[in-house]
Image (cartoon, rainbow, N blue to C red; front, top):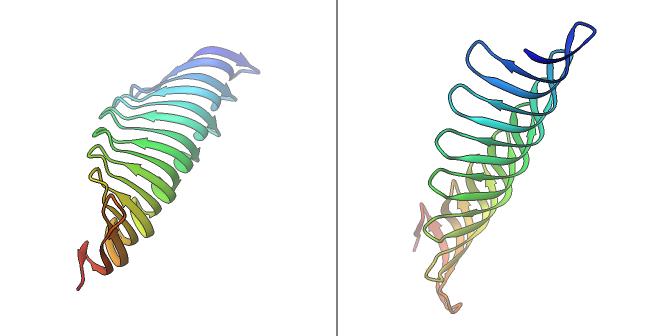
Length: 174
């Protein structure tokens, strides 16, 4: 540890190099990450944001080594609250998270041009939601694990109904 000390404890600002190769630069209180700081993990990930009791808490951004990132609320090292997740593929989700998963109201933007908005649970569109495709088609209805399931209506770019009724496994049921 290279930094401030108070009453024989790491307190203030400093740099801590862990045996496993992780490096923390930021605020420390009584030897615990507390306040704003940046952790560079040996596997390549980087977290920059708020810490409380040695864990990610409050606002912060985590960049994974594969190019994906999360910028938003954290609670006890878990994505929880509102945030933006960007996959390495370029797909992007903006909305609610719980227990490190997409969960609650949000919008997902796909690189193929689709935009889906609704209620998400365990990373999938669940319940009522709407998806719009680049050709202008819109599906508004029920979803289970990001697949059309139950009642729904598919319209074209001019609002003309293509199909309205039951869906099963992403297909028209009748």
